[in-house]
Length: 315
Ligand code: HSE
Image (cartoon, rainbow, N blue to C red; front, side, top):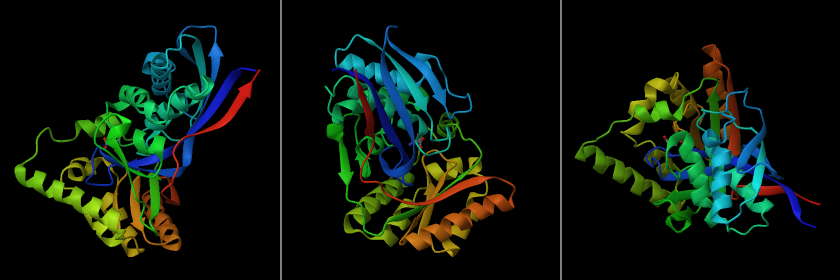
C-alpha cells in the first residue's frame, strides 16, 4: 500500500533571545501548526483549506509559506506529482512565535512524509527557509529550532551550519502574547541599516556571554546577556505596547530577565522554576489586561524535539 496522506505538527519558536538577532532561537512544545498533505491531480502545491487564521493567510500558493516550502521539498526530492495542503493554524500570525516558520516547516515535513521520507531532517532546512522567506526573508532563527528542537545557533542556511546548544537545567519561560499584531516586515524595517563600532563590540560581547552562559548553565548570566541587546530592542520598543512596564512587573514577580520574542509582540521572560514562570506569566498578562489589551500567557520550557509527523495514511 502506498502513502496517500501525511500530517505534520510544527511548534512555536522564540527567535533572537535578545542579542542573538537572526541566529539564535529555541523551540517550545505548544502551540503549533498542523498540516496535512495529500497527493493531488492538480500540478504543483495547492491549498485545500486553511483553518484558524481568521481568513488572513494567502491561499495563493506562491505567497503561502507552507506551499512554497512543500514545493521546494518536492523539487529537491525530484518529485513531480501535485500535492494539496490542509493547513490548521494553531499559531497566531504576526505574534513573534514563529508562525510563518511553523507553517513552512510543517509543510516541508508533511510532504517529505507523504513521499516516504526521501529527505533527511537536515535536508528540509533549505526548503523550509524558502517558505519562511516568502514572509520575512532568509533567516533561520525560527525555522532551525522548529525543525530540530532545543536551542539552536544558526550561522548559515544549511543544516551543517546549525548547532544544537545544551539546554540549561531549570530553564523555564514565561511567554505572553498581547492581542495586537506586529508584522515581521514592519519590525524589520524599523531596524537601523548600520551600527557603530561601539555597538558592534557590545552586541558581540552579549552574544558571546549568552553562549557561554548556555554552556555553563548559568541562568542569571543568561538572562543578563540576553538583555544586553542595544541594537534591536531600542529600535522596536515603540511597537511593543507597555513593554517597560511588563518587564518591571515580570522582574518583580521573580523573572531573571525579559526580551522580545522574535519580532514581537510576544515577550519572553526567563525564570528558574515552573512556579515562578507561572506567576510571571500571569503578572505580565495582568499588565495588558489593566490597559484594556487582551493577552495569552503560558509558562513553558524548551522543547527538546522540533516538528514531528503525526499521521500517515495508506491506501
Ligand atoms: N530574527 C527575526 C526578527 C525573527 O527578529 O526579525 C522574526 O521572524
